[in-house]
Structures are given as structure tokens and as C-alpha cells.
Image (cartoon, rainbow, N blue to C red; front, side, top):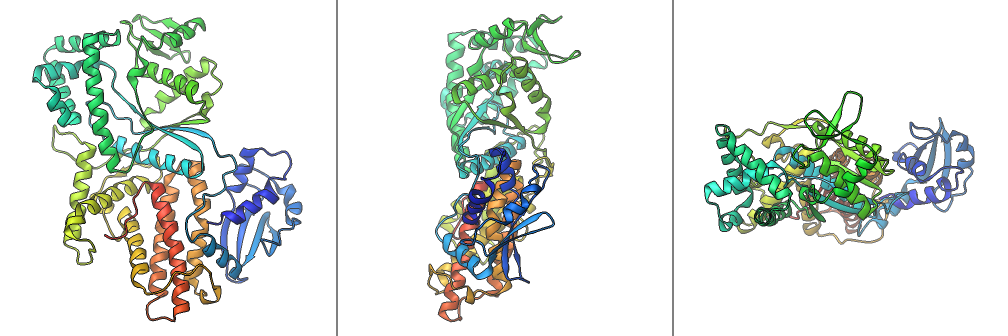
Length: 565
């Protein structure tokens, strides 16, 4: 929201600095912060001349000599911080008039990068657990922020459809007489049911496990009957997942499958590893890569079939060859840290120069969602329960503004909002408790609270009786609540850049809580109804820009802003 003035600082101050590259420039720009100084009646863009990432102290004097009088009233240097100062009324006009219609993305020095984000990635026939849910909302938010900053983003859902589990699924379907009609009606739960059935039988009958391994081996070697069955399972599963993801507002650019990288399809990669003398045979007749003196990672099993790490190596190589990505993020919980360390170590041993572009975006565990013994948690069940709980709250609340026939849609959006924000509001690496009361609380820091604030602004605009003006008169906007809101609106840019830089959606989420509270305080103090027209019109202009800012932030989190609830 302060993008215009940041752009001036970049073009006229930072870019001309000698011997610094784009990455260095980005670090400098992302450290600029906006604050209001009531004693001097100015807004200041503060630039530290030194941080952990850069040191431009020697440039401080020349920076202060820049002629930026068209934009800033003065430039001052104090305690190794440069202050680009703007007289308060001028800044209020600029902020409100320039952001009346939409939010301009903040300046990202080195944008238009090619980014791949792999997230969610459930396994076929296994429950969509809470780790998958957290990966889904974190990955989507990271993707949204990158897209907003004008990077080219490809969102990939890498589905686990390969391994001995397919043998169990096929056996379970055969033993349970499951046909395509039943599979199509509820594929995810049906596949889970037959998988569990076959696994349970295998505990007392080792032949079932042996047969499951044989079925998978036949599939990997190209057996036509198994291949056809597996394709059918993939097709129905993808359709069902797309429906569920659509419900939480997520559309993937690609569904990749582990099965793209079967033993038959990765001969070129294995041959390369053989040529580089990376593969040796261990005592179990497996082909392994030594990653240290004491540790060897299996790549090919003794029967010739592949492992998960093998397929991840092949997937990384394939994606780089096809996309030439600048960065690829794997949004997967921290328990997989060793796996991704092994992946990058092996790719480094293969002397692939782009290995440093891979990043494991780790996150903590989710605890506290209990189930009956022997039952599984599916995403659809979580969404249904959230919707039902919100619907009951709305029915029993006398401030509900929507009719009963529209309640299902709105309750579903509210439930999803609660789930998304509960996952995003703490740091990625923090474990947290899944708690329905906290998640769906209107008064606390929740997705429901953000939706309520947005609806309140929509209602204010509709019912206040003021006219939305396009020209700002700052002499009518002198209250401290105005400056609190203007400051927060201005900080949107720096918050988005920090979230992007740290891959931390919680930075944006917490900012939106602060913005929501400042809006609520301003609504209480800055009345529109019953005030003179010119005063009411100016206050409406302020609230309109606050609403646009809040809505844009909510969209980046993955929420659908409501107008009534």
C-alpha cells in the first residue's frame, strides 16, 4: 500500500548503489518500515543502514544527499538509520487516493522467478491426516504470496499411488467384490476400507503380504491387467480430490504421481548413477548410494523395484529439465527432514548444479483431533464438521444476516476460514492443538473474526448513507484512530515481503489480526451516521481502503471474503 514511495526509494537510492546485486537490493528493501511520528506530524520510511544481511553504513551520507523533494519532505540520518519523511497530510492523501480500487503488489526487486510449490500430497487409500491439511493451507498461502508478487508459480500435488500399498488395495477390492460403480461413488473412503481389510488379514496370513508385493512388482514391470485397474483407481481418486480441494478454494496446476517414476521409466537416471560409480550392492543385494562413511541409502530393492527416495530423485530431475525452476519448495512436516537431506545429498553427488534451489519448507505437528478407535480422519469429514458447527452457531445467533436457504454455503466458507487461519496463525515449526472452540471463535484471533470484520465493513458501506469520494481531505481525518489505520495499511507491503522472504504465513496472519482490531476500534470512534456529509464521506473513504487491504490479505491466506454472515 506504500508501494509508490518504496519504488522511489529503490529507483533513486538503492539501485544506484555500487557493487550490489539483486539479492542484496531485495534484503535492503525488505527492511524498510513505515511509522507515524505524531510529535513531528510526519510518516517516516525507516531504512537501517546495517542488518544481519547487509551493511551500507558507508553510503549513509550520499543517501541523505539524494534530491527526492518531489516525494519526500526531507531525508535524515540518525543512529545509522535513514528516515525518508513525508508530511502527514500529504501522505494520508497519497495512501487513500492511490489504494481506493485495489492493492498494488509491493515491489519485489528480483521477481518473475519460476517457482514450484509441492504441497498436500496425500497417499491413495490412506486417510488425509492433519499433517496433509497443514501442508495444504501452508503451501497454498506460500503459492498465493509468490503469485501476488508476480512470480510464475506451479502448484503441484504429488500423490502417493505407488508401492506395495497398491497390491493391498487390489487384493482388498477383489476380496470385497468392489466394482467400479461403488469405487466411483466414494473412492477415497472405499480404497481406504479395502486397504485396511487386506492389511488386517495379512497380519494372520503372510501369504497376503507376499501376494501384495507380487502384484506391485508385476505392475512396476508393466502387467496390463494391474495397470488398467491402477489407472481406474487414479482417475476416480483425482476427481474426488479435486472436488474436496475446490471446497477449500485450492486448484492445483498439476497432479503428479509417484508412478511417473517407475523402475521402467528411470533407466536413464539409474544408468547415470552407475556411470558415476555412485551405486554399490549392499549385503541385502540392494543398490545403494553411500552418503557418509556409516550411512548408505537404498535406491533399488533386491527385486528391482524402486523406493520413495528413488522416485523423489527422479521427480526433481524431471521437473528441472521441464521447468528450469528458480526454486522448488517441498511443504512437508519436519519428520521428513532426513529424507530431504538424503535427497539433496544424493543430487549433489550427482553434481547437479541446481540442487541448492530445493527447499524443504518444514512445519510442526498438529495434535488434539480425537477419533473413535479404528476410524480414520478424512478431510471431507473435518470440513463437514466445521460447517455444521458454524451453521449451529449462526442459527442460534440473533445477529446472523443471511437467510436459512443461503446458510449452507456461508457456513461452509466460515468453517473453512476457521480451519485455514488456525493452521496459519502460529509459526510453521510450532506444534499446535486442534481445537474447535479456538478455531471457530468469533471474538478471538480466528478466521471467523477476520470474516466478521470484513462483513462489518461491507455492512457499514451499504447502510451508512455516505457517498464514497475519490478525493481525500486530510483536514477531516485528524483522529489518532485514522493514523493507526493508515500506518497498518502502509505496513501491508513490508508484511507481505517478510512473509515471502521467510516462507512464514503467520507473519501475514498476525498482521491481519492487528488490522482487524484497528478497524474495530476505528468503527467505534469514527461514526459516519449522523455526522456532516463531508466528514462522513471522508471516513467512508478510509474504511473502504481498510476493507480492500483486509480482503487482499485474506485472499492471500486462502480465504474467500464474505459480505454477510
